[in-house]
Structure formats: C-alpha cells, structure tokens
Image (cartoon, rainbow, N blue to C red):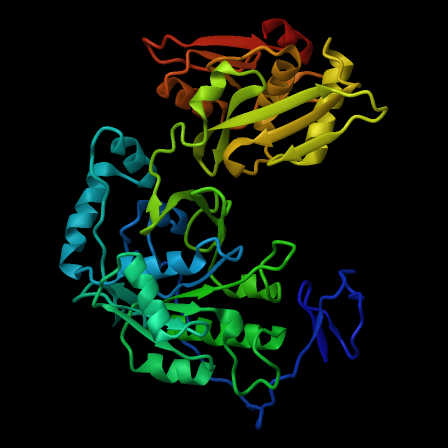
Length: 495
C-alpha cells in the first residue's frame, strides 16, 4: 500500500501524482502493522465531570525566558514537542541546550520562581522590566508523577531534575564534544545512542528523567514495521508510541524533525496533528540571529516568538531586540527606510533597502529578497499609477536587511518610501513608516499600530509617518512628531 505524505490518502499502486491532493512525488510505500489478535471488547473507563478535574498544570520554568514564552510560559509535563528547521540552523544545538536549561534545577526553588512571577508578571512584562535592570528568572523545577483523587496524573516538585538525550545520528563522543563546545558541563544530563524504538523504550522505562530529547524522529525505526526508517509508516508509528509514552509517564519529549527541500516539515501531515507542540527554528546561516516560532501549541499561544543569537557557546536570548536588525549608518544613505513589524506580539524595527537604476531595456527587472516578489510588483504598480514617481524604465531591487523574511502588510509604506528615496537619491533619516497601501493608493491602518508607535517612541524616533485618523494616543511628555498621510500621492512630497 502507498500513502501520500501530504494528505494521508492511500493507493494500491505507486503513482507520480497523488489522486487526492494532486501533489507530485508524495506517495511512499507503507507496510501496515500486523495484529495477531483483534480485541473483542474494550475496557470501561472512569468518567469525570469537567468541573471535578480542575487540577492545574504546573509548568516547568527553563533557564531561557525566550523559550518559556514560546512554549506558553514554561514546559508542560507530559507534552510531546516537534522541533524542526532547516539543516544546520541549530536544532540539535538548541535541543542540547534545553536539556541543560532543564536538568539540575532543584524543586526546592519553585516557591522562589512562583514569587517572582507574582512580582514581575508574565513573560511580556518581564521583558519590559528587563530594561529597568530587573533580573530575568532563571529558576527551574523538576517533576514527579503524582496521582490525584480523580486518577489523573499531575506534576509535583521534588528532588533534582534530570534530562536524557537520545541520538540516532551521532555517537556518544560526538555528542559530548558538542556539549563541550557549548560549555555544557551538567552531571544531570544523560546520553545514549540507539536507532531502534524498542531499545529506546526499554532504556527509558528504567530512566527517571523528566525531559527526553530524540534526535531525530526520522532516524528511529520499529521492528514491528517492515519499512525502513524515515518512511511514512515508521515516522507515524514511532510518533504515536512516543505520544503514548509521554502521556503515561508524564514526561516531556522533544522530537527533532527535518524539513523537505520545499521548506515543509518532513514526514506525513498527520505528524503535526499527533504532537502537542510544533516549534520551527528559522534564520539565515549567514546571520547570527534565530527565530523560534510555535506553529502549533496545545498549551499556549501561537502568536509568540523567541529571539536568539547564535554564538560560540550556543543560542542566547535576545530579550530586547531594539535596533538589532537595523544598520544605523544607513540612515544617511538613500534607498533605506525603517518600519516596524510585529513578530508574534513583539514589535521589531526592520530596515527596507531599495535600489532603483535606469535601464534602456524595454522590460525592467524586479527583484525582491525577504518580501514576496508579487507584493513588490504590486506596490510598484500602485506607485506608478497614483503618484508622480514613474518607474517604467527603472530596475527595482528590494531587500529586507539582516536576512529577515516578512510578508505582513504593515511594511508596505516603508517599502514604497525606500523605493522613492532611491529614485530621488534622498536619505530619509531617522523616520519610521507604518501603513498598508491599497490598490487605490490609500494608506490604510494596520494591526497593532499603537504598539508599534509606542516601540518607536521608546527607541527614540522623533518622526513617524502613519495613516490618517489612526487614533494614536500619546503619553504625556512625548516629543514625537506624527505625520498623517492619507494617499500614496502625498508621500512623494514629504520625502
């Protein structure tokens, strides 16, 4: 039998194109798991009223506020997490660091952490207090299984937490060498290598670690499945078994996954439905920043991100990005405009670079990096139609500095401003451009405008160009100058 890794449809023979979803080269052979005997009847389960089972889940606080924020203010005991990303982006590095952030923290310190949360609030509030010199929380906790009166496992804090790192890709010496490079010397981290599911489970049953890392899920195979490791059947079965194990033992498991050449998570689509949380680590190999996103999270929001910087000692938090992604020298050069994007709930100042050059060829060239090329073509067409800036004979190149990728409409105005600045050869200085541009040339309001304006004021920007009637409220004493623009035709006169 053959199964499509995208939609899960089955076929009795291999086909180049999936008959269900229409995707090409997605059918993989699958050997169904044979069952020696079919169970005739099930076992009656105890039923509870939803108001009875109100045992709150105590999340484990790791020594990384950025990761805690992405996970939903901490690691949930008994959760199954899929961590994926491009090759070489730092998945194994992050996973090994997570074991270090988790292991070795005494449960006796949990009261200190709870008191810290009462004083400093949630992760977002702690970020704000960070700038005022308030130290970040670094208190961790360990979990042990405890039975409630309703028969449901919960987590309590006891002893010192341990973590185990299971590798199917590296040997013990290679893992230890990587830990040494990262400066990890934690006696509460255990490691072993195996690539057979049965061997891993047998070892984990005798291990009491509260956190388990599997590197990687596509390299693990079960003896009960006839296909090779990495096949759809193997990945799905292995994930299902690890899910059952994590729920039964109340231990958190992180599965490291790979991505395809198209940039999607490798394996069947059902893999993302089986796990509790899907984390995706992204960034450029040529830049030192990394962004961790939660594409799915049963125990927290999916609109938060974690910002990290890759160093010789691994990933470190960037609690306050500020002007992290902006080159201050470019404010004196033409073709550079500043905007503010929202990554999750966090406003980040970004720099849009544009280059316009006259061409004698009949068809001008358009190129974009970090912004969808279709969006740039649309903005150029709107600019040519509704303003005095004519670009029919100009090659246009647009780039988001520091290798960021942005698709939200809130940077439309900054993109157009950069193009106009390049064509006129006029520097824009330290201005912020916020707004979406419609096909009719109208500059429209954007989501989270107040938050973006507040961030610009906090960072010391004195002039903000934004849509008309935006309803922005300024704090007393604010010296920022707000310039409202209603149509794209008015923008060229300001620059």
